[in-house]
Image 1 (tube, rainbow, N blue to C red):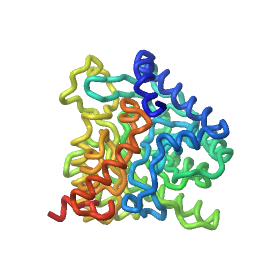
Image 2: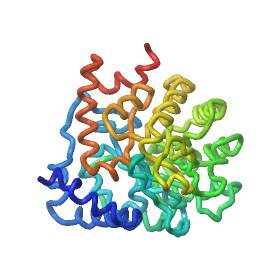
Image 3: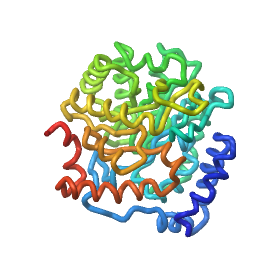
Image 4: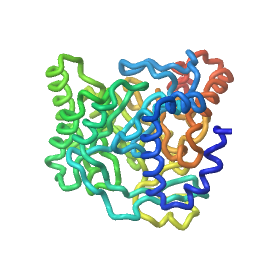
Length: 368
C-alpha cells in the first residue's frame, strides 16, 4: 500500500505551487528521517537490494548501483538521511555558494506535465556554505557518498569567480566526499562563460589547487572534483572543454545541466525563461555524453544527467559512456520508487545484452 502512496499524493502536490511543494517534500523528508525507525522504513519500501552486477567502483568509492540524486532538489542538505534511504546510491546537494543568497524572484519554478518537464530560474538560492557545513557536521555518518555542488554568488564577477569556488571547498571540504563545479546553470548571469577559453582553464587550476591545499591541511588525499557542463554547447565547444578538463587533472564530468532550448514543448509554461529539465532533455544529454566519451577516449568518468525516467533512459546513457547517472525531475513525476525501478530494469537490460556487470556496458556503443 505504501508503495502506491505517491500516486495518491501526487495530485495534491501538483495542485500546490511548485516551489511550495518542493519545500514541503524536502523539509518533510528531513524531519521524517530524524524520527527513529523512519529511515529503515523508507529503505524497506524503496531501497534497492544489493546486486553485485550493478555495483560501480569509481573515484575511490563503491556505488551500490549507478543511480543517484542530481543537484537542485536538496539545495541546503536538509534531507540527506531521508534521500539516502530511498534507494539512491549517491546524493548531490547544492548548488551552494559561499554566502547565502535569495535567488531570483518568485515564481521561478514551473511544471510542464504533458512534457514531463520542469523549467526553473531559481538562481542558486541557498543558505550558504557555512550553514551547509554546520548541518552536515551535525549529520555525522552517511549511508551513501555525498557530492557537494558549488557555485559562485550572483554578485561576484567572473574575474573573481575562482575565489568563490575556492571558498566553498575550504568551508565544506571535511563534509563532502566529492565536489562538483557548477559552471553551467543558465540562471546566474554570465556563469556559462566560465565553460570557455582561458576562464575555464584558470578556474579549474584554481579549484584543483584549493583542493590540494585542503587535503594537505587535513592529512588526506585530494577529493574528486567533477565539472558540470551545459547541454547547449556545440561539438567544437565540447572538444575544447574536454581537452581543458583532461589537461587540468579534474576527476570527471557531469553531463548535463538544464537546457535553454524549448524544442517540442506543448505546455503553456514553455515560454517561461530558465533551465528546462526532464523528458525533453533525454536525447540531447545522451548525445553530449557520447561526444564527451569519444573526445576524452573514455579516460574521464562521466555522470549522466538529464531526462532519466526509465531503465532504458539510464542504460542508453551508460552505453553512451556514463559510469553513473542522476535523477531529479523523474522523482517529481514518478515518486521515490524511481531508483528501485531503474535498478531493476538495468539488471534485465544487462542480461539481454549478455553483460554480467554494469561496468561492461559503459561506453559499449563506441565498441560496436
